[in-house]
Length: 78
Image (cartoon, rainbow, N blue to C red; front, side):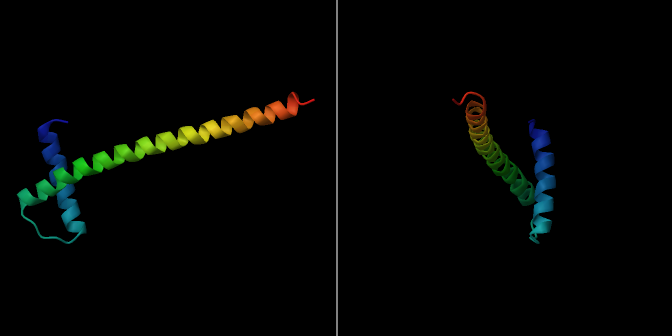
């Protein structure tokens, strides 16, 4: 992400966060809070998506195995 976009998004996020948390801060502090928040939030979101991806893969594998067992018991059982 270009530096200018990071500053603009960080300033907006910092402004919104300081208003939601009812904190009075000057503009540079507000921008710094937003930029650091964007970095931390982006890292946490990527980690969450990765874990959710692994979990969904595991659930899919279990469901697939259950389907294979059901087909085997239904059609190939003696």
